[in-house]
Image (tube, rainbow, N blue to C red):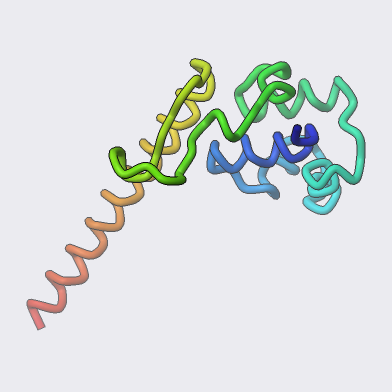
Length: 123
């Protein structure tokens, strides 16, 4: 079982949030917040509630989070290496949001590349 701090880190990463941004929202330094994620300090219930609001999840979702239930990239030849099984609605939403963010980033980068190629063609 992952420590609460490690679970917080995994959820933060799935939400594509930067550690320093979360720290700022909590009124902590980045290094102070890092100690939470690394498990160097205990997370009191009040702080867990604050973190859960920032991550847009319930405190109990952090406590029960199991990254192995989100996706497994091993030995799957059918769905581009990703298997999502026995996931809660919360975990599916996290995954869907991450996929949407990646698609948006790809679209943006394609647009930038198209502009660069167009500029090069005009030269």
